[in-house]
Image (cartoon, rainbow over all chains, first blue to last red; front, side, top):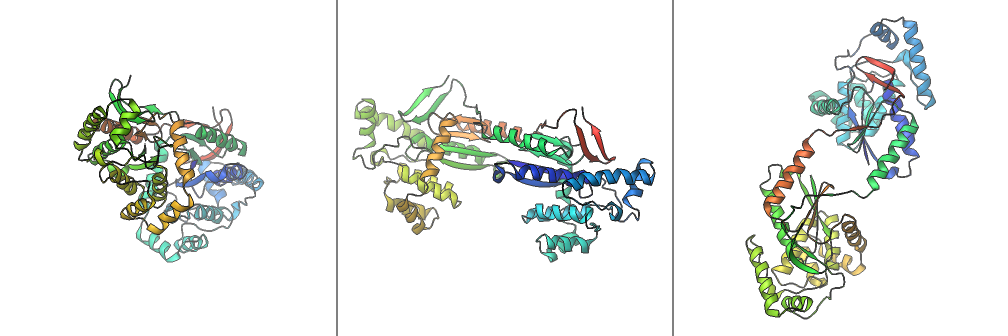
Length: 241
Length: 241
């Protein structure tokens, strides 16, 4: 089973949804037959790299609400994250543009470290108050996730992996994603949002059962044609019908 | 696109069908996106290793026909093969048990040489009058196809890859194969028998078009549940319906 997860590093529900999927997977009896792949998605491709405002202020100005109300809303989100063992430090969070972070994650995927880098970048933003558009920061974080830092620097400085990010985003749109996290199972089933762990468990079970069922093949052997094959009875030209 | 081909090395229609598929693939504009994998299938798991009879005699006794009629039937088959550039030397063909040949082909697949070994073994049987159950012969042929001969000897002597052969055969049965060659495209479409090249071309085009079409995802997001995700408008808890 293959699961693709579209998400952004500054998306609070993405980290929560990721953890809920992981918790469901931990208890899934066939987890060793499941692969998870993270895909790029920018919630705001025009986000400033350094807006110079707190996440509470950004939220308040976006929705035309008071900073106090924004803070309360974030605190509620933080409690949901905390239930999963995640620490969301909203007061120090450095909202930023995530395009370069996605490029690094794409490079990491090529090097077999996509999942490590995705987790590291989410933690960096939500917990460690890192500015995840800063190149030196990205290089250091990618190094912690097991990548060669000099190669990451080269990726960042030369603009590589832009096409990969754009292709993922385009695919998300084609698949009907209206937001993230967006989960696709076996290129067939979609789950939107940070669903409860039980939902992921149910979907894993359903997709697994379907995958195990005998595939029902559709015959494209031409009808009424001479079919030439061999059986344990011998080889002959038989009339199909 | 992935094509699985179940076949046996002593199956005259398998070599013909293989070549017709290959000719169709050669002219297929997207051939670089197609992979072909050969699967094990024994037409007669109880075949003797060295029956000491010509293929004409074996055929005659199997069908209760005269050796002359069997020879005519084989000559007709040989003409079909010749149209594809294949040489079937029925007079010298050494019919035999193919279990060990399949084990070698399975080992070859593990080493990335499955297609080379499959072609070499078919040619060995149909054209070169080789006894493809003989271990020294198998080792030499596998070496010609690029495998390490000492490792092939070890595979043959230790009985390795039996399970792989049996698993392929079991899968063929589950998929509804009643004979070989049996072609499965993208684990979804089946073609039985050595169909004309045009049939393979049509199937390649159909499967390719389907593969290129946007996959229509089925949503498993629970209805009426609180869906928590982020969009470019912001993150919020929305009621799905």
